[in-house]
Image (cartoon, rainbow, N blue to C red; front, side, top):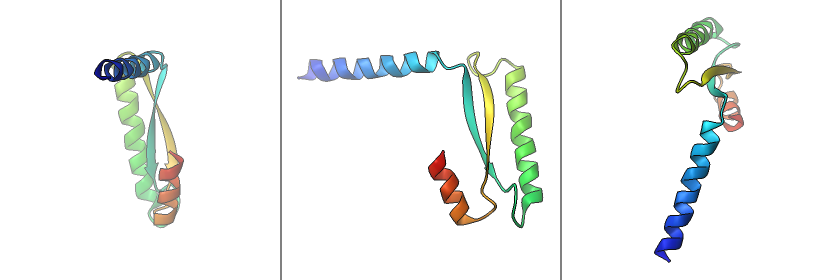
Length: 88
């Protein structure tokens, strides 16, 4: 029984590693206020995230894979933030 469990775990790890090795881009969710009462600060958050992604990609990405920012608007609203979190 222990041998079967070890084999299954090893297979799951190998599958996870092989899937990661085939990834071309790493998607990074960036969530902030694009609209709503504090949209101007959300702009700064998104600009900072874009610059960080650009800097990381300029240095070769992560293990050779490029980062891609995927931006979401939570409108500084708790219900919208929950909807965004459930989406990603």
